[in-house]
Image (tube, rainbow, N blue to C red):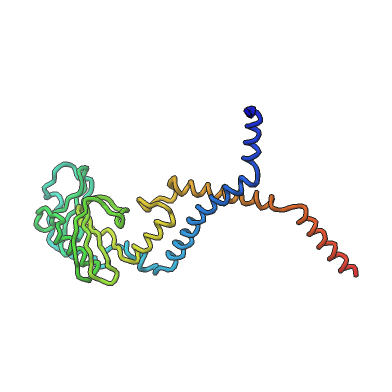
Length: 255
């Protein structure tokens, strides 16, 4: 028997908008989003329990830096410059004094006393790292690009791993020799739960990426259908029960 198109469409509409249909969808969507709700609660609790100083205290600038002493430095005008310079600064590089020259092609370092070019090699990176952490250095690695721990920075950098309780790692710019950031196990733990919390499993930086937006709208839909099913769950018997309770209270008050 062939069902007319009009009847078939009418039947689909009745199934689509019945409380039973919404209850079934609500149940499965609630199960899926419930897992994320659990992860939000777990990750939020863990981030709140971690030591704030150990988590947030690793991005401060080198505390061992000190003011430049007076000395016989080469005048900037006598430096051998290749092309126009956008900026120049006299600063310390561990125990050395250097000029940092910024141009359209990048950044160069020149020894402030000899005028010789300075390259940030492994030894220079180690010298800078010891200014921010006195623990022994276990390993030095040159990174062609930032990893997850140093994602806020750009360019080539050195990673110096220390043999301390936090398994700390200092990141030093291979272009400027500047200390960039320090990371430890507490920060790494916090960063893992931050990844779970903001659902950015790749970059761990965005809080409005498509996945979390989709989950947010799913939560909104879940709330809406939940209220709909709540009101649909009431019947006339519930209302009659409330009326009987109210009448009984009135009679007791009158007696």
